[in-house]
Length: 340
Ligand code: KG4
Ligand code: ZN
Image (cartoon, rainbow, N blue to C red):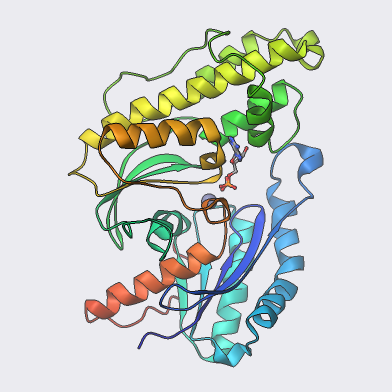
């Protein structure tokens, strides 16, 4: 008896997305647009992102409704990512969602973007075992790098996270140093296939230290020091490939070491879940799978379009929130203020 379906908006970074999801988890329609205006700048420019969300959202919402063959009044509730993220884009998406909710007289649910990533594994069909609580989440994207004990809806314990760069940011910066363009993760991975991961000695910051914090800036600096500025883009392909492969191996080694500590920091999790754009990385995925098998843990990696920023996860987090509140005898939330 929850309001269904939920339309959600995601606009916290450089993806403008809208989705309609039924309360049983069935994805009715989804649309994601990755902004291209940032490419010449080699990174996401917040003001460009906000303006592009503003320009794209109305048509995106209309398209998503058309794909679902639905009228706005048939929606049960509206949700939007309301933080953390780039504030300009968040305000655009939240305001659009709230405006619709007010006009349609439906509840508006403000969703925490990290919570949305965290709960994606519970979307029916994503994890073989349905990812019962508690599970261990590794979130690795361009903006985030953290280990979270997901203990229930609204119950998250951050076990550790990066003290400087996110993993994706490190991939992007290394790509830039190698003259590979942006976003850099996929390019580094492609080049690394031709390289030897043992060819270049690189540090593994914080590895072996207590806790499960991450640090990538020293690794990034070490890569820079292997590259005299003048030759960066003119580096022989094999040397560049060796650097890419060695860097990728270092990231993977660091992540696995940190996860080992994260496991010790929580009651036995039911599942190891990975999310975020860097989870697309084949070498990292293989090491995670191997790590999970060694610890006798089921492993769940959402399909890529649900790993990177998307609106399906936002709708699903709103649905899980509504359900948890109903079960606790609380009213469906109807948030007016932005939640950080
Ligand atoms: O989750 P996402 O799409 O956006 C946010 O940051 O929220 O993640 C994008 C990040 C970028 O830094 C990109 O370089 C990285 O994920 N990435 C990868 C790969 N594909 C994307 N990093 C390593 N290997 C990949 N195959
Ligand atoms: Zn994200």
